[in-house]
Length: 460
Image (tube, rainbow, N blue to C red):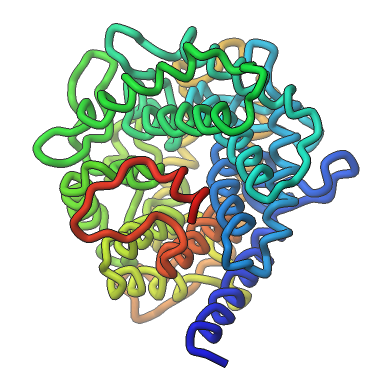
């Protein structure tokens, strides 16, 4: 067997491993086939989240559509097809999507999370584009196109502030008030969604179901959003509701890279260097999502602060893309040290001491509850039963986490805890990092600027 063949076999084995763990976060469905949860059905997040699903569907598009013919390609396509049909079916009448859904399609949302509209669009578009590439028939294609158009209309009518040329948010990926205003993550999520919709319309919309005005919007938004979130030669995480620039380090500084808008390479390099230095956990290694100024009411430190593994895997993706394979390998190898014996990767880590401090200072005092259910970030008129259900999930997961602390007498902080294991998203980003390392994602170029690469995905 050739060296190239052995390398592909090894990659296939690793991708199959992560797909098997992703499948532990699925539930059979008579209607859809198999539905993808954020974590196993008895764990912390037994729901379908558009944000997590969109991340998975991006991975599935490459696994199913790559010319390398990955062993898990068919499984990936079946999962993305099931999730696209589910997401289309749970779309609200006004064209929006919420934070999360039960397996039977009930809206279980608690928070105002505007970016989920972008994620819903991306899920539908990535499914249609993959089906087109594979020459698979799409049942009710016109209905999918109409759903995309309705979501684009909702985005522009209700979430876009024309005079600022930005999309606003209340919360999003961090689920707290620190995201109120205009964030890098939310705006690049929408740029990605509108870019995919443009591609879908070009390839598949013969009857022009998607409004041309929605497609034309992308052009002027594309050339402004990147520059609006650059200051001091790097990206910033947010412009707050009053127009103040938020310069604090945050994983979301990688948003332009994550969504494939690669033009401002120097700024991306500076952002990655900044966040890796500022967010590196001194005890556990790997990167935190943001700095844990827990006395700030908008800063949540669930189960104790520590590194988030899916975000660290995205940082590894950046290093691989940027030609720094050694650093990417170091990050993935460090993630491996925190996996369970079965290879399950958690959402985040904390030390045993931080977890105990969190339980005493925030959970038992009710501060964590107050932060989690802060009225300004909740949906208007949210049913208290949903809040109670979430609080019970929190209490159960904290109790289980405390029982499973991995004791390390040599550690200054007593060892570590894994929170939510396995997390589907963590395995998605680890698998995606493997693809970037293998050169089967964004093209690697050391000196050239790159534009959005969805077309590259189609033609490679």
